[in-house]
Image (cartoon, rainbow, N blue to C red; front, side, top):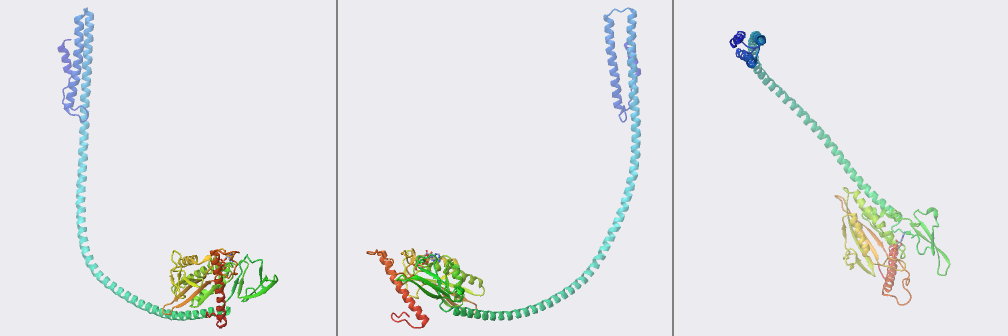
Length: 500
Ligand SMILES: Nc1ncnc2c1ncn2[C@@H]1O[C@H](COP(=O)(O)OP(=O)(O)OP(=O)(O)O)[C@@H](O)[C@H]1O
């Protein structure tokens, strides 16, 4: 077989068509595909022929062998050409089929587009219809709105007018109701005013009655009341015993007391005493206060009350009056509480003065400077300090007690050496009324003592001499006080020194 024959064969099988390869591929693609198929086969064949030619050149074949080789080459070429023809046929077939598919698809698409077009046309015509309807509706709305507006305006005016009428009626009614309630209120006020006036009258009446009762009570108890307090466990307890000869009446107006003791001739003696009240058995300061607290009300109503502690040295006068829970602090507490209770009705003012009588001289303990130098005053010219609070009152009283003259004696470690007078003035005011001014005086005398009891044998020391002098002066002043009290009680001036 020659090269030309081979080429002819190849050329016969090539189908040079400008068709698409597969569904949708164009003729350029098909042509390119076919060319590549053909050149692939030609390359293959030419390679095999070259190998064959080389083999023939280099090998010495006999005829049979040569014929066999040529037959082999021929069958190879035939096989290659028929496979090429087969591939070309398939490619062209595929291309035709693809083209037909594409054509059918295109026709379907055209059909679909036509259908869409008619739908689109239908939609446009519907849209036009809707637009027309909307225009109509718009026109209707405009027309109705205009009508509605004109109707509303008319109705609004009518409604407004009605509202004004209603409001006027409502306000008229309210004004009437208000006037009626005003009338009622003013009637109630008048009634209340009358009640107030009556209450005020009642208060005056009540106050007057209360005052009268306080005075009656004081009168019933006696203008001067004598209360006895026996110090428990005193130094003389073994020498003197107190009994109540009238057990059944111990706490009734009269409280009798029998003192039994050894007289100077060593004989047992008894003396009976009469008191409004006698305390013993370690009764507390609070119990004593309960007995005498009514004086506070009397002083608040404008009376002058004096509570005086009198007794032998060391028997508990200062303890009863001036200790922390003593009478003075309890009175201060009661009076300040009374002022707080009556605030709004009455205004209270409290003034304090504190003096001591020491060796026959009067000293103002409120004027005492920090260096404790006492300031002597004439009786009645002592300072009066306005008290702002209960706490302040208690503090000041505590300081005045500290400034009071005291000394350690054989009977009492802290014996008061001066008479101490604390005055609490109570001013009570009520609007439209003359203020009342009462006073609570607390007098803590120094205790009487047996002359010479504080002296040791031999020459007395200056301190002993002073205590002796104080004791003498104390006894003298107590005697004078006794005379003065008796003079008040009997109305007869004492003879001799003429104190009253
Ligand atoms: N009822 C009592 N209960 C307990 N202790 C008391 C009582 N009475 C007095 N005392 C105590 O006895 C001592 C002397 O009392 P206080 O100083 O009060 O006596 P006094 O009568 O004031 O003496 P003086 O006249 O010498 O000043 C104090 O220590 C006091 O605390």
